[in-house]
Image (cartoon, rainbow over all chains, first blue to last red; front, side, top):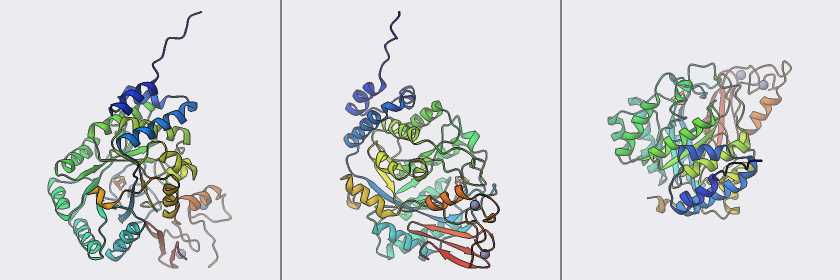
Length: 338
Length: 64
Ligand code: SF4
Ligand SMILES: [Zn+2]
Ligand SMILES: [Zn+2]
């Protein structure tokens, strides 16, 4: 009888490497975490939570998000109900400035510090940028001091400079998935083009918000690859979405990511990105039901979108705010983010 | 206005099983199809609600 070869326990290693020294896990280590047996999940989440508390603190960043321009996008991101290339039921719509101001006010009223203006485009044109400029001005004239983020697709250097000048403090642009998987998900532009926009955003001094979607047919290896590719970017914030299989899109029949798998992903991403704001974004309602929000918040997540998303609905904001209170997690204040 | 069509998939309520549609509408989706005529509606989601407009039958919203 031969004894099983002694395995190095990745959570033991992570305790010393990530929790004590703040060094994120390598690709191999992330893969080991993603491959853990389900009965190790509580231990993983507890460690991820400790890492978040140690390197980020107890505060939770609360954010709201609104779609300024919905649908009709020329790109073909296979998960997206807003692509004009698929027979999705989502029709094009523009939000007017009063609607944008109202949405920003509703968001601020929840205690949120961040309001993200999103448009379904390859990149902004003059009309969109002038709408954003007018919108930001109107939000400020409404006496709303919430920080404004934008997500308007790929940018030129000129457009980056223009957004900085408008006072946009953070830019969201997701790499969506591992570099090796991206060509299966999007064919109308490349991962590298997205990366180039992110670099310009960073160099211009805006905060970088960059994440992706889990459950688009990627392997566990590619999930691990994605986690370390994100870590290499050193983003200020990472929104973690779980695929919502939307009708009419090529992924409409993909299964929803299972709760256990999603929790392992949350924990693994926190261990790869100890200092980043890790945000629960779309899909948590389908993947976890009502319980999951809490499990995630106790498993490394420290930011949350309150209220609805762009084309999908979230839980009522108050439910999430009540949950944060119950967990004794203070909402990050505006002054502390400046 | 009596609902004849499913707001999620746009098919007749009597035509197919809409259990999955009902779940989506309950958890994460605003209606996309007019329940009276099955036209695709223009839907605007905001942080605290949604409105959906049919070119023939007008606007409905989360608050109504
Ligand atoms: S670029 Fe954005 S809006 Fe357009 S299809 Fe891709 S994800 Fe959707
Ligand atoms: Zn239906
Ligand atoms: Zn109608």
